[in-house]
Image 1 (cartoon, rainbow, N blue to C red):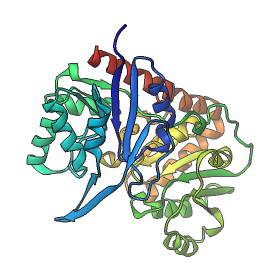
Image 2: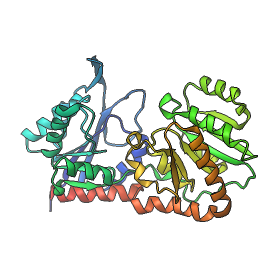
Image 3: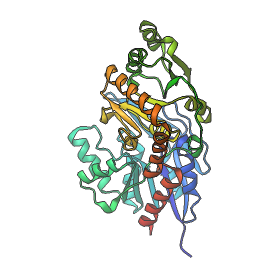
Image 4: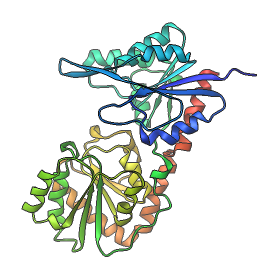
Length: 365
């Protein structure tokens, strides 16, 4: 009987949206798995998953950069005795991952990166160093095909690369969810309210659109500093068109998706794109492509969403008005196209976990 391979995953924190994916991987009979992560990371608490080992972080600031070290992490790695380590992407700010990588190479343990597969922003020297960590790993599992292209440019052999996609938990998707019929055309934003999200652009666009769409509403879900947005909405006379809900999580978000027709995210977007598409909502976001996460590959302009000129409220208003007309005449087809995109790109836990298991099997024999 073949020996069951031991696989250790290393994450900054056990993220809630990865719960189903990890459970499916852990249920595979070829592997004995565990996760090593922080008890908390930048205010994010871990989701409870069986066989997770949680440690405290030690952090410090040097030359304007914040560095992290997961206490006792190397000891936990040695205790687990892994055949393979799967680690979130190369990040020189997470010092323990670099140390564990070196330990794995010395002891013949396969080390696989699971990440955006980016070139980073550390300059020429940082790019060269990052390339070495990718090149001397056992493999790289990229979130998107764009990551695969970046790895090819760095000269990483194709035999070390695969695309596994990304996903949320099944309960967070809205695949079998019906929308509420209403004469009000409702826009939706969900996410942390920060300057990077550029919600002021959305508020200004609403002031333009208001004269073209009589029954107009915008729901903004998320915690953060809303005072500047409240002041701006009053100045522009759209305060009655905007509902600030505050932070809402999990299945409680579904009622807001049910009311909405269009998802607008003025800043760089990530998994929120997949979330919105699962509810059949087309997505409007900035054309500043460098700001987006790998999930931007899901957006098909004119089919399941569109881009507007970054920071341009008039451009955003024009796109919203265009999609108002499109949805009024073709909403069923558009909604189906949004949902179909997720299956096309494999953005479900079952698909992501299957690709990861297949890659692990190929590397562990």
